[in-house]
Length: 357
Ligand code: NDP
Ligand code: MG
Image (tube, rainbow, N blue to C red; front, side, top):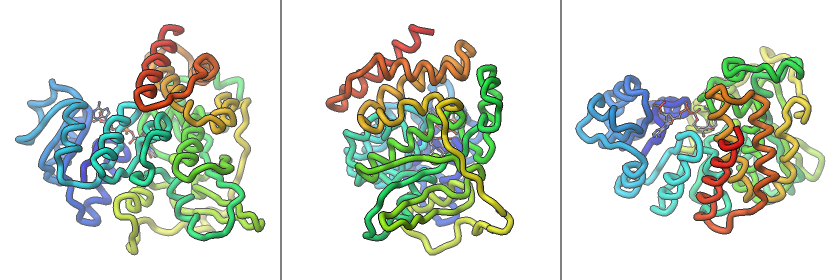
């Protein structure tokens, strides 16, 4: 396999699955965590390594090491491996996803920003999502019974129990304090704002087609997805909050082996469901409109990435992230007609958001 983002939260879990099942890792791609990358090289013995920055090239213990996006695209084309795991973060993951599909390779896709921004212009049949909610929906959706609604769950993120008026004072450190999952910085911020769940609804729309999709908070993150059937039955996917299960299926399609211990329902005791409200999660206001015109995901994604950068730089507040996204969503009404438009709109929206800060 070709693993993009090997030193991140998903990347590390993907390597654990690769090791458990003896899968060969041909290419490792990482950003700046060189110490961890060198350990991974020693253990997995890839034939090629790629890093983000040229200054790190001499610190990598490998004879074939390259740098930057062009090198990533080239290795996707030239490697004999037919599986690309895309665990990069943000819009930077889009070109590698497109390249892998163009080369006829299978993509195990954690990089949800690819789908959110350009789902309309991708061959979805080549994509296996790495996300607990979409894995849950896929796992449940194996009958021909007519479906009424597909539901995914949210943890509620760092501020789910905060008094609403206090959220305007939230710092970066507060936003990174996730109750149930240990993940990279950007997705943890997206969980706190509920942007992550809006992205996942959009992803579900591209992956499973038109239909009714919604989300609800389940505070323990052991139910990941539910399906309401037309007959009045509801089924739920229950598993521990650990990404190795969706990763194992995305890499291998099927497995008969134990990936996680079962959930002990007596230890869980009780479950709590809450509504996602606009008062606590202002971004939720645009979800119906976005799902109605899903190609506008590129605007929301670009505005969100630019606003998160400003928040991390200390230039805007946490709640300003949602305000900036909603404003950009109203300001940019156009939909991309092709993939070139996606890159063009992405640039324009980022520039706009930064210029307003
Ligand atoms: P992390 O921030 O933990 O990891 C990102 C990875 O990308 C790191 O290996 C990082 O390298 C690498 N990277 C960043 N910039 C570059 C670059 N310019 N060139 C090469 N490599 C780069 O993120 P996560 O693993 O949490 O998330 C990855 C994706 O998966 C996101 O899109 C997220 O939304 C999605 N996802 C994550 C889940 C989770 O549980 N974490 C669940 C579902 C989806 P380095 O660290 O060395 O700088
Ligand atoms: Mg998820």
